[in-house]
Image 1 (cartoon, rainbow, N blue to C red):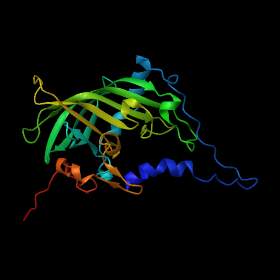
Image 2: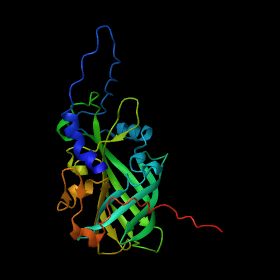
Image 3: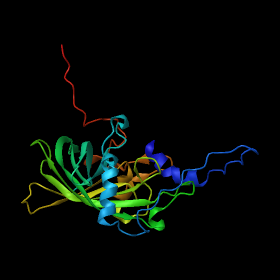
Image 4: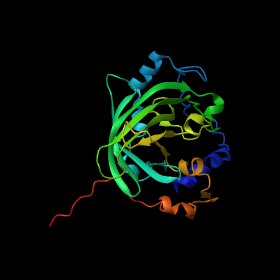
Length: 270
């Protein structure tokens, strides 16, 4: 399972045997050089550097759902104070050509068993290069590509009266790296507190409407990280993940169920 791979990957990589030396006279291709860093470790990119980066690298792809991924890239999180399960899928992410770092988004979320479409915007307002300690490089990462954290804000409003309704808003943070000659990639294993140790994090609140005084906390993250970093009392086995039965009442009893709940249901024709 993906969760097992996530937990095991660092151990497997760190414990991997060193490759044998190549036979004499056999030339091996050199690893691609690390891309030039856009800032010193810990420094925030200038406005010009940030806009240039966001204009050429569509970071919106890092949270847009890919159909071939199935349930793998559904964002899981918690709604309210009791750990109620909250799931998000961004089906559409359109960058604003006039404002680098701003994206118009649409998708669906599920809470209390209801599936609700939403629309809104995400704006990345700052990019900072992580220090070596925050980046947490692996020994097998030969390129040592610099890792950055982009932070900003989001506002997502339900576009239907069905389901939970209301509006989610708050802060977004994502750790990413720029491998030489490749598209940006999420850096899912870091020591960055802004993302709660890597990947992508939406941290905010829900209001019934913009003028409502009462706000409910809401947080969601990519993959299965939410089970370790949000609900610490989940049971994590050595070879598998077992959701504590006490959380079944708030929607966490079917974490591995292959249910593409966001997909449009096609009506059978006679």
